[in-house]
Length: 434
Image: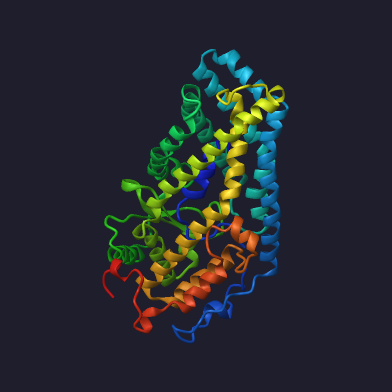
């Protein structure tokens, strides 16, 4: 939970096209027949039934998701109707004196308030619960250090950027939403460019892969995918988690494929190569570049909804809110509330796009490796290590699932093999060599 609404966009798109559903939700125990038995490379790999522990994790996660959603909508309402946001603005004005300093100070105060009110729930979800289910290795010192680093980034982010939409609100009350939305594209491109080199290393150590033989095989695979100058990084996530993941990140000169050290420890080399084929698919199929126009369009739509609805709410509740114009800094909770409500409505459509892209990246990974069995066993291990539910309910899929359900992914790994029947590969022209 962060103070600035734009962070919702960053959370949806900028953590990259991750291989794993983080905190999804089972599996057969380590050493089960589903993972170890290998009758033949073409034999289907069964979808493991979720364990009781995984189903508890899944169900409690759904409850917490609803609580966090309601909490995230309730807090801006309380800040508005109690007049607390207006009092924060007044305090900022007494110190800031001019318009920019007032806005910057208000942004800092607002971020601190949001951090404080969200802290108990965030601590429980991110630290207490993850340890209770054996998914976290993080020490309290590491968690608190990361939390305050995130807060610092939020404070700087708000102070340096919030002036722009508010300046446009003052200068062009009718078109501010359009101009702000158009600026979202270069802003998101900049964030994608700098995050891997300026922000991500603040939280974890990134470095070259330790297994040079595996790195060579990965780079050979990247050559077959036509990805020039590929860079593969290993990140020390074992200090935080027992779960496994890999993702693509960056833009232009900072693009990279990142492997958690946990996935390198828990998956076999051939399974890692499929994961890498999947991640390379995101680059080759243009999914990374799609982030910018898609996210910008969503921001533009949300800003238009705010433009059309906010002033009417202000006029009706002006006495309670303590401000009469959307250009007042105290309007930030209202903007956040409407922004989040808009994205709640749009979430199923957004996630449908990400699930489609993940499915096609799976297809690319299969076509470049032609390794159905290791594709399937990689997802079985992902299910086990991340406490994943392979067949979640429809509402979970529509509102929470950025990836296809693990059961569907394993089924696809088992069934998709056109090279065995002489069928055409969908992405064959993008892959060099056999």
